Length: 298
Image 1 (tube, rainbow, N blue to C red):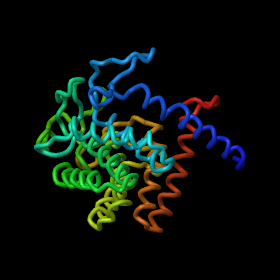
Image 2 (image 1 turned 120 degrees about the vertical axis):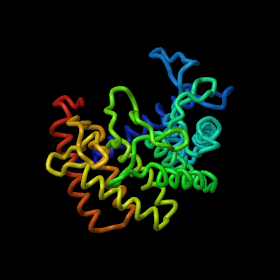
Image 3 (image 1 turned 135 degrees about the horizontal axis):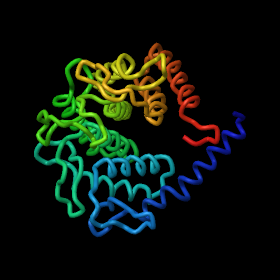
């Protein structure tokens, strides 16, 4: 791809981000009265005021507008990030046991109080980004506290992490994100996003213990989740990492190429960077060959 074509793609993507995506969420989903966000919009953009809301939605909004503010310094993006931070802490944070509930009703009542580890990861990721954008210490402290809870209660036998635990961080029998998932204790999705969260946290909090944890997590990804021959990631696993599914998710495959690269960069390990660089190319080539149609669709 020529530099001119690449620059044109970048320009068009940025124009869509600034002119469409970021304004859309500010204009359409902020619930000013409830100091929160709406959980759902219909196809005609009518607000569903009774929709369930998940912590991941608020964490993603917090990360997005924190990152946007860090890059563009637009006060509207900071206001959106501040709004999301308030929503996350006021409506999703568990004041007794720590961590973040999975979902709440439109009126704020807790619906699913489990500690889905993927949800904790998104909160850590967003809080670290908000700290980086604003310099405020409180969100970093909350990210660190959540990281420590995950390490204390969700680290699994044979390495890696459980998909979910209960409200008080106790073991539970059904750890699925949804009914379409397998009820296995470990999943690629959880590990991918814990790695993402710990990578960002390490860049703003270079704690040796966190570095060691991230190194072990990356090695677990390479040893058990990524297949270097096929360029695919396994989806669901037993505690001992026995693969329980032959499903392929091309979106997560290509995402893993990016997130593994970021993790290696954060760890500043030249040997690891070289290993992951070659693997990331393999994953990207496989995704392009198998997951992209001739017309560019996926």
